[in-house]
Length: 397
Image (cartoon, rainbow, N blue to C red; front, side, top):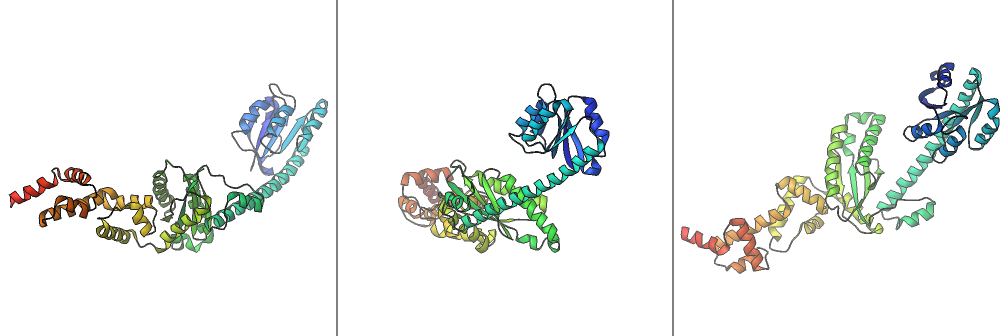
């Protein structure tokens, strides 16, 4: 059904038009009415209509003024209703893109014929709009795929080649995220291609809504959606929170668990390919999370005496450091820095108990180059100084 807005200051005229013909049989329905052009503009800015039928002579804002303002933001088809004396007004309106002109009182057959012509015109418009939209969408998808693979060096280059405007990020920091839809192969709808496509469409919509205006989603291939996300400098953690919420939403609404690969943060348009490569590697080559945590714990055990960081570990195992930080906290029940402190303090305690090494030697051996900092951390961890700890154990013996 095509929604119709009737604009006429005479309520009797609006009612008679409503009952003059069987609108639904023709594929139309009158869903709103207005008594003048100003009121009609307010309605049109809030709701979608396929057709407007308007009188010419109205108070507050007449039909010509209404159509003139309407054309500043919409090409919606318009039928004018007018008396004989308003013919000159109607001719002016036709120059504004009015599609049909009918004399009052409206003849039933003439209105039906006009609506049939309008229906064909609306259908043709929709086909053109869909083709234009599909073509633009395809170009945008192509651009994003090429960008993620390092085939586009700048947005300006792509715009010059295809003569279209492209994305304009408001940040120079990017992160690529890859969503794997592998589970759709095993989902109950896998035997129905149409249902599978609907599922993919739903997942894409959820991703787009979650990252609205902050990134661009594209279909990387049949089993993966990609996201190029623009990162503000003050947003180091926020996007990971969004990502966790997103995975929960997809699981809740589609009953499908989506695997996610998070790329590294990069600071230039041309470096997006590097971030995307990390996201792909994380999806394709990473072992399960439990195996990852074992590798991380072992790595810390072997390197705690150095000045190590979560970012260094992330680089070693090809993971996004922010994502790794959240994964670590979820699995270990504490942050990376807290875990590293505990490892170092427990190692220091063992050395205090089972060696004759000086406190400064122990501090250096567990990763502290500044003795004062070691003293502070040890006392915070145990409640007493390292010397007092060793003395109390000796006395206890």
